[in-house]
Length: 235
Ligand code: SF4
Ligand code: SF4
Image 1 (tube, rainbow, N blue to C red):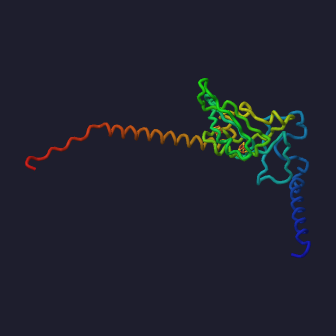
Image 2: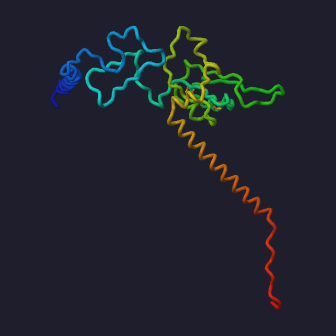
Image 3: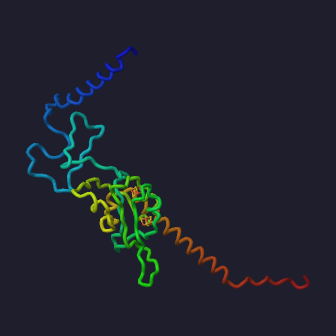
């Protein structure tokens, strides 16, 4: 390829893309109609309720101009999209899953998790966190804490709208800030939730099988030994 030809070719590709982007809209007379599925030009006073903004998608069937009017509209986030950690409690009984085992704090690369374990009045250890903190400015969203937690207690949240006016106290998330219900988690992570449910179901079946096996074995051990069969006379 001669000198400069690559540059010209690159510009031609960009120009083609530019024209094609608008072509369909001009051809269909929709040059000034915006795409994205949300509100039109006169919907200014009908803003969607915060947290219930329509989700719009730009997939392979979409061509022409496409604008997502964030924050009134937003692109969907995928299940494994992760921002900050959250601590899950069971919706049915309010049980906080975290046992304060400290594994997440140990594996956290920037060491931004710290906690204290609850103690009974007698001083014995209670498998619950008394305090649990994560410094969100230090967290690098790697998800290792969630990968290593043996109790499915810490998961990665998808909420990315976290800006505020104070960046010291409010960026240290406490237990209260971190707790979310298992119902919330099941909605934001339906595939992971279904998979965990299946594993739990298989675990229950395996446990039942073990119990039956143990019962059968112990019944066999306590059964009287079989009498020797009588021998024929003179044998
Ligand atoms: S979140 Fe999980 S890994 Fe971290 S302390 Fe609690 S139980 Fe242990
Ligand atoms: S996501 Fe990564 S950096 Fe953030 S708290 Fe978990 S382990 Fe630490």
